Amino acid sequence: MSVIRPRLLAGATAAGIVTAALVLAAPLAASAHVTVTPDTDATAGGHGVLTVAFSHGCEDSPTTAMSIDIPAGIAAVAPTLTPGWQIAVTREGGDGMVQNITYTADEPVPSGIRAALDLGVTYAADAAGQTLVFPVVQTCVTGQTAWTEVAAKGADAETLDAPAPTVTVGAAAGEEHGHTATAPTDADASEDGADVSATAGVWLGAGGLALGAAGLVAAVVALRRSRS
Image 1 (cartoon, one colour):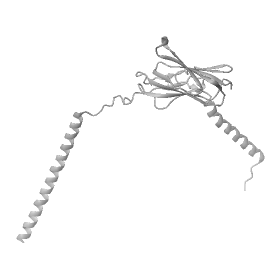
Image 2: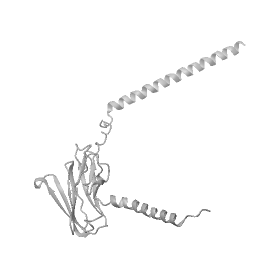
Image 3: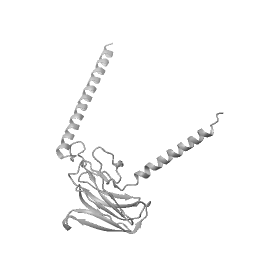
C-alpha cells in the first residue's frame, strides 16, 4: 500500500483549491459584464426580442438606471414594460427613430441580483453581416459605468474593462446560400406531374414486354411437349 507524504498531500490540496478558485472565477468574471442576448437568431429584416441583463452594480453600489443606445442596424424597437422600472424613450428629432431607451429602477438593484430588460426589435433589411453595438451606461447609487468600449478588429472583447454588448446579424431567411427560397408554381407542379407520368409509362412498357416474353417462352415449351 502506498503512503502519501504529508508535504505532497498538502501540495495537492493547495493545487486543488487554486484550480477550483480559477474555475469558479471564470464564469463570475464573464458575468461581470452587461449583456444583450437575442431570443432567436438575429436575421436581416427579421424580428425578435433582445434581453439586456446585468448582475452587478458599480463597484458593488446598487444600480439605479440603465441607459441603452440603439444602433442604426435596428429598424424599429419597443421597450417591454417591466415591473419595478420606469421607461423613457428618446427619439431622433423628437418623433423619429429611437436613439436611446433608459430604464430607471423604482428601487436600487443590489449588486449580485440579476435584472433583465427586454426590447422588441426589428432588424434592418441591410444589416446582414453587421455586428451591432449597444453602448450602455449603468448608473448606480454611487458612480457610473459606461459599457461602451469596442474591441479592435480581431481582438478579444474580454480583454476590455467595460465592453459594449454586441449582436451579430445574419442573412435573411432563405438567403444563406446566395438565393431566395420561392414557393412552387403551377408550372413546376405540371413539370413534376409530367415527369411522374413519363416514368410510370416507362415502367408499364417494360412490364408489358416482360409479360410478353414470359408468354412466348411458355408457348414454346408447350409446343415441344406436345410434339414429344
